[in-house]
Amino acid sequence: MDSAMIGKIQKAKEYAEQPELMQFKSFDVHFQGENSAHTVSYHEGAWNCECGFFQSRGFCSHTMALERVLGKMLKSSDSAE
Ligand SMILES: [Zn+2]
Image (tube, rainbow, N blue to C red; front, side):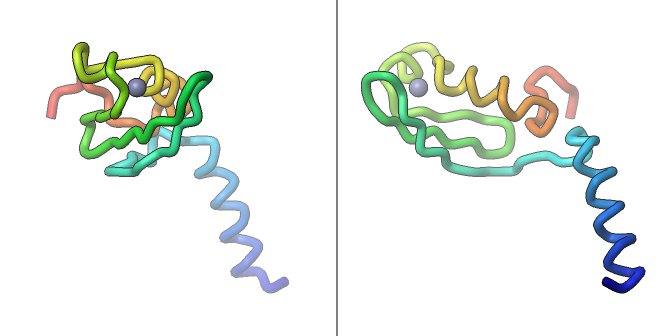
């Protein structure tokens, strides 16, 4: 392995310990819940889920679970733009 490659791998390890450097812009997730599957989407800080609870409240167990898993990689909804 050449030295440039070794340097890139080392940098990747350092970056991987700093998830706050990475911000998701948008994605879709297939979420297999206990009773049924849902598609959860995220775009520029806004969640969407096709489940009934989300439709009435604007959040749900699926979006909250993803927030816990993805943590710092999500744009904080209470941070000023
Ligand atoms: Zn949901």
